[in-house]
Amino acid sequence: GLFHPNQDIAFLSNWPEQPVKQSGEDVEIGATLVTKTSNLNILELYKAVRPNFDEVFFVISNRGGDSRTRVDVALCGYKNVLCLEYDELQFANNSELPELVGKLTAKLAKRFEFFFGSEPEWSAQGHQAAAVKRLEDMMTLIVEMQHRGDDKVNLKYGVRGRIKGGSVRRRLLELNDETRDELSSRF
Image (tube, rainbow, N blue to C red; front, side):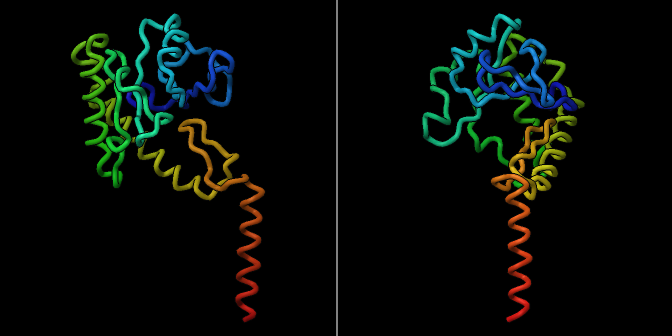
């Protein structure tokens, strides 16, 4: 949200074997500014992606103690890597978002000062406000998507529906609820 708050999320799955996806389309990796991935092999990823950019930065959200959800601690010492604990990204309600975005922006600016300088353009209050707005909109969408099939994806935020099996399963659940209501009204 600090960089391009109105653009759809770009997702890197298994590049270069699979293309980067943005807005449901294949895009060149060099065309994206911020790209999300679940690939934690950042050394290999850096080697593959770096030729396309002046520099590549990683912001990692470490979760729990499982090595499949964490980056090696040594990699967190690299100057182009910012490791955050998952708990640092949590908030109880939208009123906490401005403070959360402010803290994360300060961490980004401090960690990557060697490249962006002491006051990067993207750390300005207007960019932070846009990031807060994007997060608020995303939280609203997450609530809406809870009742959609997992085959439905919002391309701007990368948010999936929560009902396993997609729309067909949802309709079956609705039918079961109708049948249950019908049956319970008989007894």
